[in-house]
Structures are given as structure tokens and as C-alpha cells.
Amino acid sequence: MTTESAPVPRAAQATAVRRAASAIRPPRSGSGGPVPALAGRRRRAAPVALVAGDCLALGLASALAVPWPWLPLVLLLQAMGQVALNAYRGLYRTGLSPSVLAELPALSGLALVQWYATAEVMAVSGSRYAPGWAALGGAVLGQTLLSCAVRALVHRTRIRSAARDPQSTLIVGDGPVAGRLGAVLQEHPRYGMRPVGRVGARPADDSPLPVLTSVQEAGRAVIQNSVRHVVFTVAPEAAPDGEELFALFTRHGCQLWLITDQGTAARFRSTARPDHVWGFAVHPLAAGPHRPVGFRVKRAMDAALAAIALVVAAPVMAACALAVRLCDGPGTLFRQERIGRDGRPFVLLKFRTLRPADAHESATRWNVSEDRRMSRVGRMLRRTSLDELPQLWNVVRGDMSLVGPRPERPYFVEQFSRAYPGYRARHRMPVGITGLAQVHGLRGDTSIEDRARFDNRYIETWSLWQDMCVLARTAGSVFRLGGS
Image 1 (cartoon, helix red, strand yellow):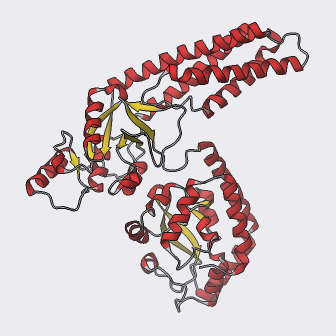
Image 2: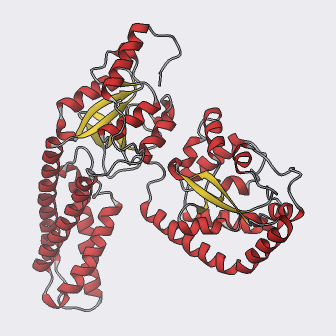
Image 3: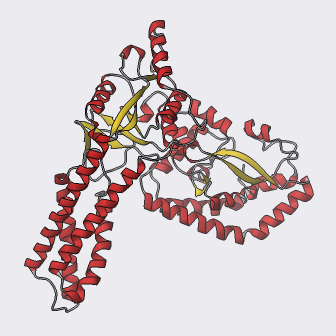
């Protein structure tokens, strides 16, 4: 990958190539899949230890402030509320520069809210065991201090572990910021990152790290060096080949960061407190909106609704399959490779509408709506979108969602990604049977640029309510005969 169009001296080019070749070797296993997340255990262990520490502090404070008849119930309800509130405030997200003092206001405030609510409930219930103000203050103070002590121990242990075993890291970007950041990470292993290469650096930068000049070299470096962290020094959409690199690193399960000497970012997930690496602003990058609970609900809703729809639509699907069999011969289902979330391919199912259906031609031909090989049954299935009913099985399997960007064929994904900025970013979310672009009439032979814009708008403003609205609008347009 090059960062400027002007020609560079041959000597500099040769130097860059030698550096890249010396650092990158073919993967031992020959596989291009994600590397095992061995270091992920350390990232998962810290939040678990923080939750255990908070529960321990709550238990000791409850034992001092609440008498025995109420203690088990109060402890259970308090523990559930504390974990939920702390998780909502992001107190279990371990940053690169954790600080107990930065967490102290949130911990004390949430403890005060919890204990005040507990005292009010006990007082309203008429219990003579309701804690007084002195007991309430002591419980809040004791819980806060104990939580801070445990967190200080967890943070110190994690920093020492990171310094002893820093993880392989790639830096994406050129210029002085990338150079200074590479030096900082090498001088301060406490952040748990060991730079092993730079992607997109100019050959003239004289980087002490191997320079990777293409997306393919970056992919080989991730596999060969078991890269666990990738640091962007500019927003991915502003970097050369940034969207393609972002998708590549996401597929390999790397932790992505935007680390700059400025405080702004285009696509970063909110955190409970600001983070930094030796003064550089840090923003964790996510492939889509960081709403894990909402996404789990979305997945559960997709699976349930798709399963119900399969049962309800079974007679219709049987009639469609019989019509295709009688009119067009054997082979009622048409299978085609499509690109899903994070660029992963999957096999999409549809009722066959062409006779005969040529797989290679279908993979590279854009529009077949006017093909003479399409029978009356096939044309009817396409106009009513009944040919897409088998995709409900893709939803049940987890290949697709009910609502999301429409999946496209690999050939056209590559074409559109080069021609339209932002097209590759639409793969941040699971693909869907219907979507925001489709309910606005962007189907068939319509503007790809407009589709990508609507798809990215859907991702950036995603909510379960928006999914319900899209499904409702889709249901209202089923009988308008607007299929593609």
C-alpha cells in the first residue's frame, strides 16, 4: 500500500521491500483465518476480577449495615443492581491506562444511590431494621474504599502482566505521530503493546520497524506474528485502504485503537473515562455500534421471528417449490455465495427463477430481471419477493438478520468497494433480508452510492425500534409487486 501517488526513488522502494520481506513470512498453517485469541484470556480476566471485587466489597459493607433478617435479600438485590449500574457506566471496561482515582467519583456516586434506595425501600416496608444515616454513610464509605482497593490491585496486576508479555502490534499510518507512537510503545511496555510493523509508512520515513506496503502484506503479518492490537493514527476512513484494512483486522479478531495527538475521532465507542497512551488520546474502535446487549436481543428476535415465519410460511413455500419444479424442472433452490458481516462469505438460499441457472453467470451479472430464460413462475416470484423466503433459514442459522444491509456477491463487493467510498463500511453489521435502503425503494438497478449511504445511516443510528419500523414498512410493501 502506498500513501502518495508521486514516484519514490528505487533505492527507497527496494529498502521498503527488503524490510517487509524480512519481517513477513508465509503462515505456517497455510490458513488465512483468525489467529487464536490466546491473549484474550487476559483481557477477559480483568473484568471478571473487577466484578468479583465489587461484589466482595458490597458483601462486607452489607454485613456491617444490614441485620440478618434482611441481609440475604438486600445482598442479592444490591449485587444485581451494582453490576448492572457499573457495567452501564463502563467501569468494567479495562483501558490502557486504568486509574482508581478516575473511577472514584463514579464508584462513590453509584454506591450512594444504591444504599439510599435500599434504605428507602426498607423504611417504606415498615421495617424497624432500616439503617440510619450513620450506618448508610458508613456502608457507602466502606464499599467505596474496598472497591477501590481491589481495583488498584487488579489494575497493578494487569499492568505488570502486560509489561512482562506485551502483545504484537501493528501501527497504521505515516508521519511523525506514527513514528513517535512506535517509540513510546517500545519504551513503555506497561501498555501491553509491542510494535512489529508499520502499515502505510512512506519508505522515506526511515522507520525502525518493518514497513508493510500492501493489504496482503498486512494480512500475512497478522498471521505470522499473531498480532493482537492494531493502532490507527488517523481515522480508518481517512487512511489509504483504511476500510479494507479495518475489515481485515476485524476478521482476524484484533483489538483496534485510534491513538492520536488530538481529541477527536470519527468512529469510536464511548468509554466511562478518557484514556491515553503516554499523553496520546486513545479511542477503542468498533466494527459497529457497541451495544452488546442490544445486539444479543436483536439476534434472539431474529431467530424467534424467522422460526415462526418459517412455520407460518411453510404452505406458501411448498407451493412455490412445487410451481418451480413443475415449470422449470429439478432444482427448486438456488444457492449463491454472498458477503456477510466483516466480509465473511456465506451461502444464500433463494427459489430458482431462471432456467437453467448458471452459477458463474449469476455471480457476475448484475441484473437478470429481463432475462428471457425467466419463466412466468420465476417472474411472479421475483415481483412478489417470494423467491427470498428461503432466506429465513439463513436468518435462523445466523448468516443473516431480518433487517440489515442487503448482502451482495463477492465480485460486485470488490467492484463497488473501489468505486464508492463507504461501501465496504456497510459490512460492519449483519446483512439482512430487508433494510433501510430497500424500504426507500433502493432495490434492483438503483444507485449503489445511495444504497451505501442509507446502509451506513442505518448502522450509525441502529436501534431495535428502527428494526421494527423497517419490518413494518416491509410488510406494508410486500403486495405492491416491487421486487427485483
